[in-house]
Length: 268
Image 1 (cartoon, rainbow, N blue to C red):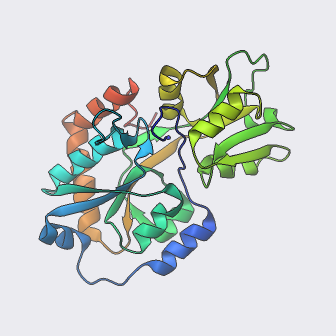
Image 2: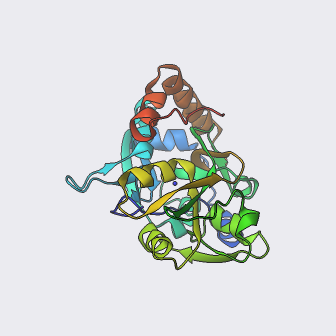
């Protein structure tokens, strides 16, 4: 798990209709993506650019920074390519990949069965879980999503969290395009809880001035990986090899410790 301010919220997965549209947009291509990227000398990398601590613009320098940016640079370097970052809204990021606007997405893309129908993924580089955010003085301690029946839950628009909350009968779901409105509504009592990525929650609590706190972890472990178009076996092997190398030399773990204070690069 954005935007200019530390309490920005992030969308982690598009709805089924968007994935289907992306599948239809997949262009035919003969050359493997690895060959095309090598010929250009660059790896075109899409990310949202408004989702700290994963990927965002440094307020002082205006340059992209964050965990995903560090991972992208590590992978590109191992491939012998220069990273060429493209920022795009989450709602259209998968469709853009299907249309060939960039080579990969390195922006906290969760691996799901529906997504795997449309795209290929590298081996995972991050593991996390869904987690609730509640008001600091909240007396009720929600242990699971079922405890929020009859309550209002804020989620990211088009996110896996939105899907999880909407699948829970009796929970009223309010979707937000960005975190500030979501967390402000939580702080002011307009919603009862928010649902986000556990790594994002830790960052929010350190950087936000709002009266909020971490709640329970309420879901299974999610896997984040590099997403790219199907039909590129050489590229997939090269990216997996690059991730294996940066895992082995400790640089992937170092990036995780830098941004999260924990090693989130291995399955729990």
